[in-house]
Structure formats: C-alpha cells, structure tokens
Image (cartoon, rainbow, N blue to C red; front, side, top):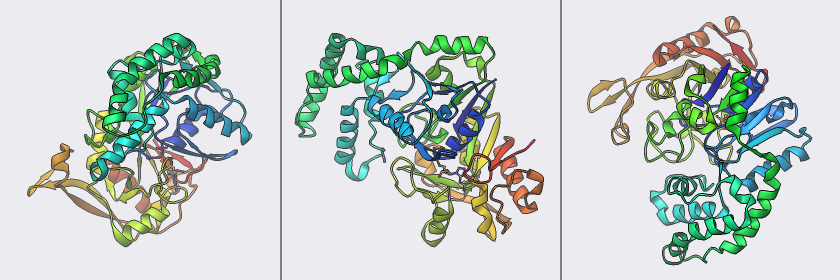
Length: 425
Ligand code: GDP
C-alpha cells in the first residue's frame, strides 16, 4: 500500500501527527518536496519534537526513512536535527538521502533574508529558510546535487558558476559582502563527507520496495493552497506540495499511489502572507488561537502567531480536489469543544453572486464567506477513540463538513498525542 499524507489547506494541518501515527504501519516514510521551512509537531514517548527536514518515521527504528530528490536538502539543518534527536535519547534512525537531491546552501538563506528585507511591506512571508532562491537555482540549472559535494573540484566549479551572478546582486542590489567560492567549497565538502554514508539512488530503493509490496508513506509539507500552480499565487511555496508531485519528488510511478489522505483542521489556520477569507480577528481569534494545537497556534518553524478562522469548506474542497484526496483526516476536533455554535463557510459571495468554487487570488481577495451555523457540543472530547461515543452535535459537525467537501472523513484526531485518534468508516 502506498499512501500520501498531504495538506488540504494553508499548511500546519497536523500532518506530522498523522504521519507519526501511520508510520507505525509503514515500512518506508518518504519526504518528497520542500525543505526545512515547515515544522511538523510530533509528541510521543520521547517528548515533543518539531521536525523540519527529517521524515516523521524517524521515531520508529524499524522504518526506513527517505529524503527524495525533490527535497531542498540543507545538510547543516539535517545534522542539527539528527544531533538533537540523539541528545534526547531517540535511537539512531534508518535514513537514506537521494544522491540527486539538491543542496540548500547557506547563501540561499542569506538571499532569502536579504530579499524579504528589500521587499519590506511587499514581502511574501517567507520563513527565510532559503526555499525560493534554492528552487530558482535548481530550475535555472545552477543548483548543486548532494552527490557533487563529494567531489571537491566539481563542487568548486559549480559554486563559481553559481556565484557569478549572485555576487553582482550582493554587491549592487543588497550592498552585501561578496560570497567566496573557495570558502564555501571547503565548508560543503566537509558536510559532504558526513553526508556520504546516507547517500544512495533512492529511486532504486523505492522500486525494490514497490516490487516487494512494502507499505510506503509519502509525507507532504505545507498544503494545497501553497502549491505554485493550484494555490494562492504568489503567496505560495516554490515546490509542489501535491500528492501528484509525490511521484516525481520521491521517484515512484504515479500509478503506485493508492491512497491520498488530505489533512485538514476542524477550523482554519494559516501562517505567513496570503489571502484567508474566513480569518477571525480580535477576541474571537485570540481565544481560538490560544486553544488551538497542542500549545496554541504558533508556527512550528518560526514561532509566529498563526492566523485562525472558521472552517472553510470552499478552500478545503479545492484542496481535496487538487490533491486528488481519497480520504480526509480532520485534526484538532477537540479544540472546538468550547463553542456554543460553530460557523462553517459553505460558499463564497463574489460581487453579489454565490459561488462554490475557489477563485483566483485577485477575486479571492474580494469574496465574503457564506456561513452555515452548527450547534456546538460543549464537551471535552480530548482523547476519544470511538466515533459513536462523540456527542451527536460533534458527529453532525463532521458529517456536515464531509458533505461540503465531498470527500469521506475517515480519521479524526482528538488531541495532539499519538493515541488520540478516532477511525471512522
Ligand atoms: P503540520 O505541519 O501539518 O504537521 O502541522 P503542525 O504540527 O505544525 O501543526 C499542528 C498543531 O496541531 C501542532 O501543534 C500539533 O501538536 C497539534 N495537533 C495535531 N493534531 C491535534 C489534535 O487533534 N488536537 C489538538 N489539540 N492539537 C493537535
């Protein structure tokens, strides 16, 4: 069985917890896109972790974790994460990194930071992890593959080539000191030596796993609305977080993916810039933000307060559609237990017309949510594992959302911990 776990919304839907839960029954867990720019929160017997680059299967010693060629591989971030797991008593994980994955360099982070500063009020809300400059280099064909870190002279040549244009920008646009290809060669050659034991052709490894009928979990980062083709461009990320891209970014045949689980929260949240029709403000937002997630809604990567709002069925239906979702997992259902009634955005109003589709960004800015209001359940359901024992109003909420998003909700998360999960259908 090959499954993808992906986000249906703006990111931070709780994919990390779901992946950790489902990793237990998987032989391999694969990251296929993005880099250390997102954070999955995982709470298990070792403690609480915010994973940025490592696949969420690393807490299961028997799981083979894979970083595919589509990932932005920051070797320093990778080793920091591996070291911090070791320090906290997590057994050494099984990890293989694609030798074709490209390397996110420290100058990508610098360029990202300088560019966000230059843009000022027009910025995109980047996490300043270097993702946009990294993917720009990749597609401009001046990127550096992980395998190239182990050949010092090839690395020097690639770096010189890559830095030629960047140093013009450094000097004349950003007024920053120029980058030194020789110093970078030594730094990344040394990191390459440490990386070497992890490198392999991961497509071969996955091909063998597919042929042997292994269970593979493809772990997405961010969410459908951040997809550069199908999302809220330009407030998107620079690689595709869609299940369709998982085949490419991991290195698997597209027909091999059987199940696409799109994750959504019982409410909406978004970190970073963008358009968010159901966003709440003031007191109502404060309360939901404070109660959301495991310790309030603050970005796992940046600590930034997340914007929060009511569940948006239009955005989520679009997310499920472009993900090709076969099932939905709804997280944070327990958070809603304090509300007397709960609005759900069932449609948008655009220029006086009611619409059911998710429009392009310039129109999305003008939509007004059309809400249906459902009764709350005013009960603490944290940790409930049996769907039939959930309060009637809570089941009604789930079933109404299910009808609106046109995708079966098969998993409900009732708390941040691994065991707080309810299976349905
Ligand atoms: P990801 O990037 O999609 O993995 O999402 P994050 O981990 O960044 O954000 C999800 C937040 O919700 C984290 O704080 C999780 O610990 C928390 N979380 C996940 N599922 C649940 C749940 O069912 N209930 C509660 N209360 N918190 C949850």
